Image (cartoon, rainbow, N blue to C red; front, side, top):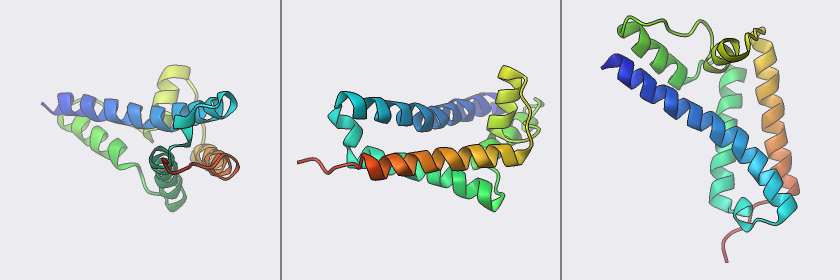
Length: 128
């Protein structure tokens, strides 16, 4: 059962990452094409909070709880856990890319800054 729950956490983690990355891309595209849902206040607040949590974790040196939970579940299932963080581990697996932790901290911070700038330049609106 541990392996099953580890896979569930992995899927949740992937959706969380996709929410942040694809969400930002869709907000920018929606800005260009005038999609009203990209200005939805609730969506944009949750989107900004999501990257805010990620940036705060890396700046405070806190490992992602999803990464820790999945890694522990894999360990308990006698499977290999993560050697570093979720993103760096999967990037290494997918692209054979390794980088020091500061690179990921910089990337998360710059992406968070992009999201904050998007919020300021293309602000959300309350539904009328």
